Image 1 (tube, one colour):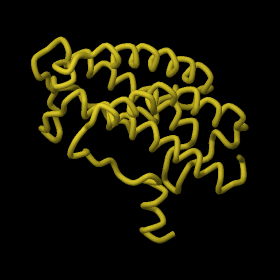
Image 2 (cartoon, helix red, strand yellow; image 1 turned 60 degrees about the vertical axis):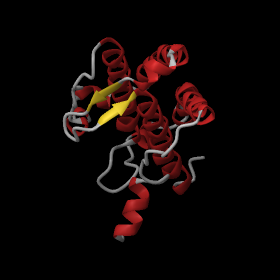
Image 3 (cartoon, helix red, strand yellow; image 1 turned 180 degrees about the vertical axis):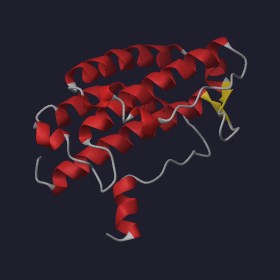
Length: 180
């Protein structure tokens, strides 16, 4: 496999880019992406067999099962970052080792409870997002590794991308193997 082919498997929709301007329309699209993601993901993966769930989306990558568990863990971390940012002044958030989390025993568990958790989480998250004022969305946190200050408005776009990114990993795998 060439480096270019591997890069396409890693980033099937491209890498995340921070937009120069975040319009109200774009922000609403991001909320819709976050709102619809759990149901779209469930519809994609629930018909999969155990063998399919245990298939890596790329060489050296996570299995479909691990991706499902990862998005739930990643998104709960994001939700907590919103809470910290709304209740503290420019908090330094806690980073985590997602690669290590993917090796924990719960990442080999059935996906149905994780999908239910993801639906509940996204319901709460979207309620929060839709309630935020312009000044709330301008609040920022600091990422401990990059030292970047990130606004809640921008973070919303990053997680809308994250939804599309991991959905595309699974969808492209399924299309390559004629599962869908």
